[in-house]
Image (cartoon, rainbow, N blue to C red; front, side, top):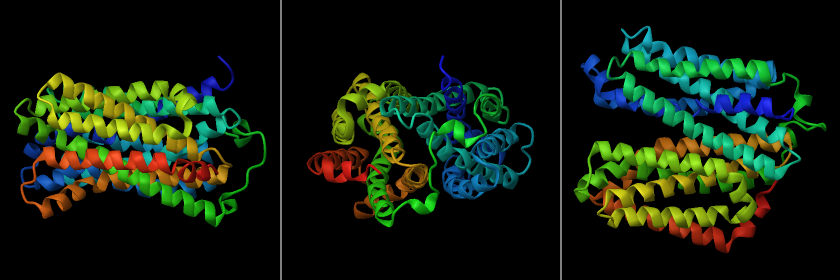
Length: 392
């Protein structure tokens, strides 16, 4: 193992809990029973509210990093995830306190999410293909952590919904590995002076923000599929909530595979990753809408997960190609676009429903499939203008 392997291991261990907020979704019915006076809407916020506060954490990370440095900011975020994420396992009498703990969980993830991506980019700054592979592994570890924590919660909740929150203790492992393996001094992550955030040109910022709207649309489409796949299976008469959860698991498996192979995929496709992945995602969704087989739908869900998790690390790679200043700004924009898309997707569904009350999931997802196809076509035609011009 070379000298970069141990810092990478530490950073990847932190990535395991980045996608952990929805892991307790299986707890929602049990929490509703425990707090019968709390509305179902407020209970459901347990899984979505961390995404909103994660955005706040991303902004706070810029301030905290200047005061205590990258490593200590990551450690602070992991400590918050471990403590406030697992808080319901040892105190669960007040819904308000539990709700606040979920907000603080989101802030904790936001503190280190951007820094993990940025530090991996700095670690392999002069080795583009290795950086692409490392960012792919980061994406894979996000998915792996989500799978492991969701599965563990599903098993523990059979015993106690309170105890299942102990899965967030996984953050303490990341805390230890970051503390041991990630150097504190910035020169260990770069070999030349890098200007601060003010060195990012106004034009570069505008290009990155414009490109983030593309990511926002892609994430929104992806999350809508996640939300509508169970209703679609019920509409088709081929599945129920259990089969729906299997589809989500298939997405996660496809995403994990994509993360592991992203280095090779990027080496072959480079800036054509987004159009190829978008068209593939659209085809997978469309086939799912007309499928009468659970097996086919599982394969298509895995294909969607594979496609999506090629797009996310590509954006991270694209925005960490320049200096540290552009990397900091770019990864912040990517994370905000991702979490806004994730948070606002239910409201996009409501907009569709407002045009046609009682719209069938199959029709809605057909629109989403068509949208992915259009994005793929446009990003193919204007590929050089969209992506190559944004390499900062």
